[in-house]
Image (cartoon, rainbow, N blue to C red; front, side):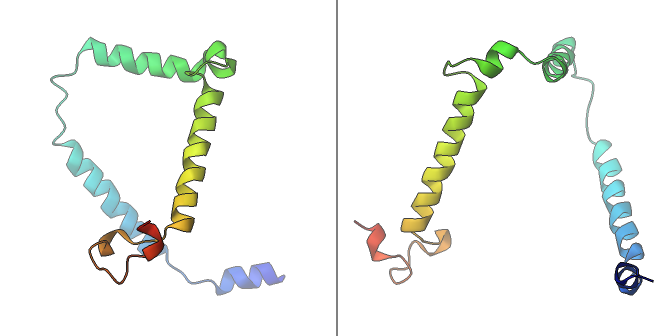
Length: 112
């Protein structure tokens, strides 16, 4: 018996916990579906859903590889730039949102 098999046999048995959580989630899902009303659904919603599905299956190549401000590469670069700037803000100005009003926990270097 290899060490991997020994480790697998020594792992805790939590099948009952997983089944209980799965059962609760399924029950909550079924219970929430009883409240959803499908009476107001019209053909416009189905048309939009169908267009989304068609766009996933057959994407617009011009939109994917274009260099305009609405293209995927430009928007991806913009998203990365926002993430980088957000990371720099957190790096150089660390503060916790709930403690803004407490003068001791707010770093003085963020005040200017």
